[in-house]
Structures are given as structure tokens and as C-alpha cells.
Length: 363
Picture (cartoon, rainbow, N blue to C red):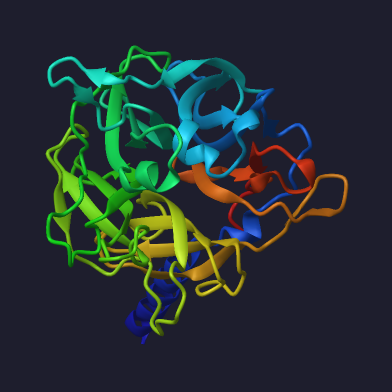
């Protein structure tokens, strides 16, 4: 009888522990202070990938392009990835330099580099003494949106110092697939990268399929690639990534993932992504949470909603400036801030910025 009681107590404790390990970000969202906003005069600010360095400072890699060229398609034709720094995770952040500027012609080939004209979609982490900056690059004529968009490819730059110099590769790490029937035969973009438990790297990327007669191709889907080290080579993998159990007519249901592996919360991968039409969390344009045991097969997390199409402001009220390009700052395996781009498309005259929404402790 005593042994049965002890066994029952152990089962209760294990059940409680398992329950405590389910990540619930929605319950941790705190109001956004007005000061938690990074802006640059004369520029649209987009993306926002914070990395805490060994120096104790917070290094922010972000995309920017001149307000004078318009939000869209300006981002696809004129964007560059820049670097800012702060002593605190919530800022204020100070612009330092342009990390990945246009680089034009490859002298070895006499042709433009794959990322000659545009760098965008910053995603970064610090690993083995180096900063690894994943990004989308493209090239074109500086005018035609489809040309720039369809030349999008995924790459990585590496530096020992967040202020550079950065080593950029002559070729993308994730290129298109030659088979026109493949989901990634037109372009690859929007990389999300993290270090795997074995020390390798997992990258989730957005892609579009070539469709004959359609210059912009087919629907948006996601793929995965793995490598033993950030520089690659990368091997593409198959899996189910951010797919709905009941496929609809929408050309895109999820976008802009941020991924990480958590030992503390289930010993699994997580992804925070934009829930484009509310498929996974019920909040169209909100941020939803996915989970995966292997990084290849994903499903909505036990608590899929992170934020909806609005979020609270410190001092009262709510903001309806939807968050895009989510990036979660982790410290000691705990989510502490949700970084995201807000006020896109110059609606009501607003210029896009990066905000830093605080997370409280797990309830």
C-alpha cells in the first residue's frame, strides 16, 4: 500500500512537471512601454534580431531602407541589414553601421553577387565565439520588383565582432531546386536558424514554386535544411512545416518564423510565426507558436496563441499595429522579450519601427 502511494505521488509530480514544461507565452505578455521602440530617422526599420554577446551588450541586426522609396516594393529593392547596440535588452538601441551593404560585382566572375543589391530578413545567433547572421539577398535592376523578388536566396555572414568585418559567401547556402515541380524552384527567403542539440544548425526557410506563365509563381511554403556548421554545406530535408490540417485556398498561412530549441520546455524545438489568416491561433495577423520534436515535423503548440491582432500598452490602451518578423530574446532558456516590426506599409503616415514587448515569468 505504501509503495502504491509513493508511485501515485511520483505520477502526480511527473504530471505536474510535464504540465509546467508547456510553454505559454500569451500568459507572459506584458504591456509595451512607450520607450521600447527602435527607430531611425528617414528609414523604414524592419526585422530585428537581438543577440546577447559575451560582452554583456545586446546587439540588434535589422533591415532598413529609405522612406523616400516607399515601403513596398522598396523593401525588396533597396533594403540593407544594419547593426545597433544597447546596454539593456529593451534599449535604447543606437545605430552603429551597415552590416551587409550592397556589394555589386564579383571580380572573379564579372557578374553580380547573388546578394549584390539587397540584404533583408536578418536572423542571428552567437555560436562558438562567432556571430552568425542569416539573411535573404537578391539582385536586379533597381526598379523591377519581380526580378528582385524572384532572385531572393538564403545566405549567412559570419563575424567575430558584431560591428564586423563580416565574411560573406560567394554562393547562397540555400539555393532554389532545379526541379520546377519543387516547392522551392523559384525563390528561397526568410531564413530562421538555430543551433541543434548536437551542435549543428537547423534552418527553416520560406519558398515559392515556379509556375509556368505566372511571374510570381505559386503558393508560399516552408522547407528545412541542416548543416554541421553555419557555413554549410546544407542538406535539404522533407517534413511538414506550418501546414494546416485542413488546407484552404489561402496562398500563405504562416510567415516570418523565429525558431529555437528549448531544453527547459519539453526538450523540443519551438517556432514563433505570424499567423497570416488566423489558421492556428484564431487571431489573423497575430503571432502563433509551433512545436516540433525533430525540427522537421511541426504542429501548433499546446498554447498556440502568443499575441492577437492587438497588444496592451503600458499606461493603458492597446495597439493595433500588428507585429511582424517576430524574434524572441532568450536568456538562460527563458523568453524575455518579443522583438517585432510594427507600423508597416506607412499606414496613416506611420513609419515602421522595431518594438520590444516584455515577457513576464511563466505562471
